[in-house]
Structures are given as C-alpha cells and as structure tokens.
Image (cartoon, rainbow over all chains, first blue to last red; front, side, top):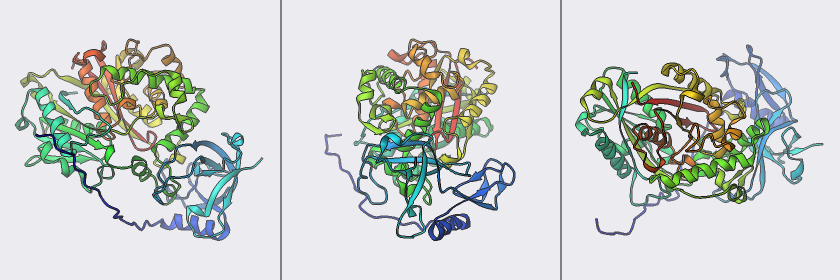
Length: 154
Length: 379
C-alpha cells in the first residue's frame, strides 16, 4: 500500500455514567461513616476473621456473615507507597498533585486491610507499622471521601 | 497429556502500532501461526479469542477480531483475561475430544487509551476506585511489603530490569532492548515508591496466536510439536486488603498442580527455562519463588549469582520478558510462544539449552490469579 498518513478516530468526551449499588452491607458501612464517623466491619461465624469494608460472604469459608462490629478508627500502616508521578485522576481527568501517600491500613480489630490516602507531610514518619488515625471531611456525603486521609500519630 | 502446540505467531511488540487496528494485528499473528504449523485455516475447527473490553474500548471486543481469527462458521468462544487462561480453555476443548485443533489468539493495544485509567477501573467502584489506585501504585504497595518481609533490595529489583532489557537485545519481537546498569534503574524517575520507571513494564501493543492440536492430528502434520505436560490455574481474593500480598498462594497452588500433572517433583532441577509474568521487577522474583524455583525470599540472591541469566542454570525470561514489552492480555500467550520456540531450538540468538519449560500468566491485580503451563520436547 502507498505510504499514507495514519488516521485516528477519537472517542470524544462521551461518558457512560453508572449507578453502582453499594448493597446493604455497604449502606451500613457508609451510614455509620457519615452519621457517626465510625467504621463497621463484619465477622465470619466460622473463621472469626473480621472484614472491613463489610460484605456478605467470607470468601475463605464461603459463609454468610451477619455479625457487624465496630473497628478502628485508629490502626497501623501495613504497607504503603508514596506516589511521585502525576497520574490522571480518574474522577477529574486532571493530573493528581504529587507527592501523596497511599496506604493499606490495619484498623484496630480488623483482619483485612483498609485502603486510603496517607498524609506524607512528615515523610520520615511514614513507615510500615506506624500508627495512624483518620481525618474526616467537614462535609458528610456518605462516600469513601468522607475520610480525607489517615495521619500519623505518635 | 494428549495435546501439543503445533504453531505460534507473534507480531512485534511496539509502543504504538499505529498502522494496525486489532483485526490487523490478529490477521498477522494468525497467519504466522498457520504457516508455522504448515496447515491452513480449514484445518482449524474451533477458535478462542482473548481480549478485554476496557482495553479495547468496545463491548464484546472479541467480535472485532472475528474475521481475522476465522471464527465465521466455526465454533468460537472468548476469554477476558490473560492469554494463558484463554489457551487453557482452548486446551480443554481440544482434550474434550470434540475438536482436533484450537486456534487461540490474544491481543491488546495499550497505546489507544490512558493505561492508568483502564487499570484503575479494575478496582472496586465503591471503596477503591475514587482513591485513584491503579496497577502501578497497587504494585508499589505489594513491592514495599514484599521487600520489607523478605529483605529483597532495590538493587536486586534493578538487576531484573538489567537482565531482561539486555536479553531483549536478541529478541526481534521486543519493544525495549537496552543495555542498562543498576544505577540507571535506581536513578530513573521514582514513580511510586519503591518502583522506579525502569522497574515497570512499558505500555505496549501486540497480538499472539497459538494452535493446539490433539495427538492424532499432530501425527498428520509436518510441524514440530511441543507437548503440553501440565496446565493449572488458581485464584485468590479480589480485594487486595483481604490477601497477604507478600505471599503467592494462588501461584503455589497452580504450580503444584501443574507439576503433579507433568510428573515433576523437583522443579528447581527439572525445569530448564521459565518465561514469567514480570510486569514489574519485583514480580519476577516473587513469581520465581511462587513457582518453587527458589526458596521464599531467596530469588534476589540467586539472581545476583547469575542463576537466572541466559547462560545461568535456570534462564528466566531470556526473551526480555514483559519489562521489554507488555501487551496486556497477549502477554501470557507470548510467554507460551517463546517457550515453544526455545524447545524447538528456533529462538535464534536468545536460544538456551532447554527441553522443558514453564510459561506463566497472571490475571487480576497484583497476581490475583495465575496460570502455569509446563511444555516439553517429549510427549
């Protein structure tokens, strides 16, 4: 074929908005987070593992879980990263300001790890095993963004 | 097992194959595989395509490559995931006795979208997605914990990058052949701690096709068969926070099952070569350990001794691996194709001495599920 210029078709800015059901377990989690600034987990009747966020089924035991218990709000950093590269924020389409911390946090009383941002103002203190607490937003929306981030406590 | 791979076809892996759409890539790979097997499309009686709707930016993405994969008037099915899983489905169809030959294809073009947004969409939309986690940041979190528990160092991670990019210099299909040093890796841009730019695989375009045939059909064709001795896959929890990210339970289970099928009791000594899903440097080391090719936490030390070099005792990713070209979805099928070339002694300048090898694929975030293939020169 002769040497033609490559043509590209752009998808345009069309979006497909979804309305994700959070389910009854998620609703309980977000109601407690919004109204009482508390974290709710759920315990497996068989292995006794406490899951946060709560969900209906223990994937390890294939058991239905109904035993809701409060966990956190404090915890420890199990693992984390500090983002240095400005990725596109999927919510805004804009580059995220860097650096920022992202951590997997073991909330007190929970057996699974809860994800959120970690404040890296005092970067040297951000370590695996460091103790953290949540900082909540002023506005109460009932989403994961009701938590602004977790910060290191000494 | 009464099945063999009788043909493979790969496109070159590139940053942006702008001259080709998905179907063009599939057409090239499929025809190469048919020629490699010395058969025609009429000899193919069923087809598995492997693709991802999100990566392709269209619903039912498998249909877009349909004509190029010859699925018209044939039994066709599709897998959304890594190509090794598509091939496992294709193998089970061949072994069912209903089909003699299965064509398996896998493609993606990372160049056409913003990969961090695509991989972000793999996360839970209620709890995780809006926080912006993507494949790189998630993997950084796993790397941090793995290094913390095992004592594996950034220098050891960097050595993986040096080894694989160097190996790619002898692979005409690879995207990033490079001579780099440990310092080059450590001085490359920090993306998400502890991962530097050169700890990460690139965004890539590519398509791979393989043809699986039953033992009766193998007898009728000229092609050199590479026999399938063991295939197994296994999954772990979806939520990363539910898993111990420093462990590779799913991989260990898959590997053990595949080894039993293949009659392998001591993989460290009985495997000659491995093509492993090294999307990130630390993952090559973790997966080597999960496959039982090194003690837990010891892969970095063995790497330093040169064990996994192309001239080492157990060459790992002599093709250059994913670090040298990572067409998502197709990547695992490329691993299978590379092992086939090696066992047939047709790997050119990257040839190693190998009669039996492992091809490994991953699906999901941070190794949620793994697929292990054991391929052999002998039936």
